[in-house]
Image (tube, rainbow, N blue to C red; front, top):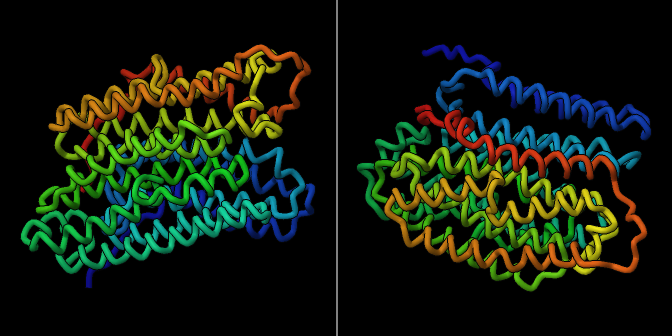
Length: 469
């Protein structure tokens, strides 16, 4: 019998977040309503400590190779935990003295923990467990307000998630049957000798489940209703953090487990990439509700993020492009939602008319973030898109780069539909009430998006390195 000598400190960021969630759950049962913010402060401290731990962690594997620690995991940890800090900041004011304030912070941490485990999963069984951990708290968050819209959002989110979750589990079963193992390094060898049909069906099922977490075609149906019906901080969470874990999992699956399999992974992902960006951008054209517009925007962004996943293992730039794009997208998307959180009274595009005269700093942050989502230099998303375009061209999918370029130009239209009223003169020049913590978050994320774009060279160099096997 072989003795396993595993060090839990290899998973220190995840342990810190889990411990904070458990302690926060206990504290929430004893603290008075006016002191529940302490649970949020504890969550913020755990996320900040997790970022430090992720930065200094050494590469390798943990728990018999089930969890990989490499540039993909490290970058995902930093981005997810940094995004968690921003979500906590956006939630502080609207949740203050809410009877379920501590529960909200615990749910955010558990969902973020699931995304962290997705990012480092190096085994199909851990992938399934991480998927469930990332999903169940998110369903509750979507319906946290307990109003009609929130209940509908949670129900649609849950039903689609349950269906595609079953498909994910079925796909894992099929890959296990074909490869006789669930560990990615051994699965890579096992699938090379398996009949093509069985792994192909399994891959399609797993891809459907992970694209549900990412919010891309064909698992995108929940996104518009769940984002519109949930509170703005929850909408920011749902459109950002689960995506990071899902894309890290997709990249690792394609570059490692399926590298030797007779499965048309690149072509399938490329087609879904084109479908996601096209559907998301076309559907966003005529939206009036700002949260719903950002929901369709995030579906479109999934298409661009799938580009480096399609050429995982086939293009040298794929890993750097994906990781940098994820970081830039997280900052920019959270910045746009931070503006929405800072102006809770504004819901439609027309409501933002005259924003530049009434709240010029917020209008500036909004313009930077929306143009950043288009991919305007010098923002981080611009460099991320440029790297993604280069990766798919190097990987032999120039046609996908052409479709992405056309979609990028088309997306400018609906972002300008939001920017135009914001800079239009308005007779009512009375100042708008704002939530200052959310406003500060918007200023910070908009600035960070530009800074990351300007510092792209050194950052891209840090994202190099092979996956841990």
